[in-house]
Image (cartoon, rainbow, N blue to C red):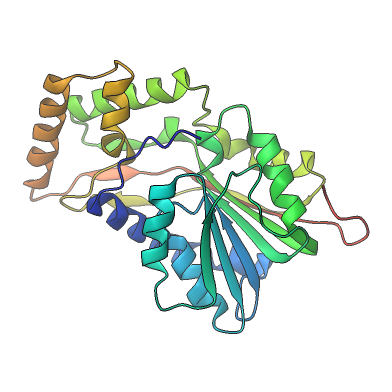
Length: 267
């Protein structure tokens, strides 16, 4: 995949916030997938490693947490994130060809990757299944990007979000793939044991920046923005940062857990 997001410190902080929220909000699904002390788990498309660290802390010293990402810069950031956790590792690899050992993991997680790999969704899920031991679980998380809203709206930030969606459409990506996770698991031969959608209404904290802003370099490179646009969007964020009554943001995220058959491993 082409990595659209600039891995700034603010972007890495956003990943940590997301990982903490996911850990708190997906307790039932983590239990269903067997992500617990002593488990062996993989995080495919781990990005800068915020969730990989949470997984490593969850499985503990008797478990294993291995991360894979296609972007060397993200892998370097993830290596920093897991410092001091000998049960964790990270490597460069593709979501369709991770280089990890087949049939070796109790649970294989893949978060917010399918929406950025247009045309490869089924191949990615099929590969995740090959990494999972018989009876283990594939854990998918993705979004319905069309349902993300900011209230009250800022016209400039709405414009940024629309251009971000246009960037993904031009790359053949499907920002509504979250609603398809159950179907993708079934197509890979897995049994869907959990599949839910929805998301919280959040007060947007000051200085938090969305993925669309982290993708500004990609927007410029694609001819979808120029220096004047960047200045206008940055000014809009600065206005938002000063608001006493924080804006609300609606987030639409989907979580699905698929079980690999015991009798005949998927793949």
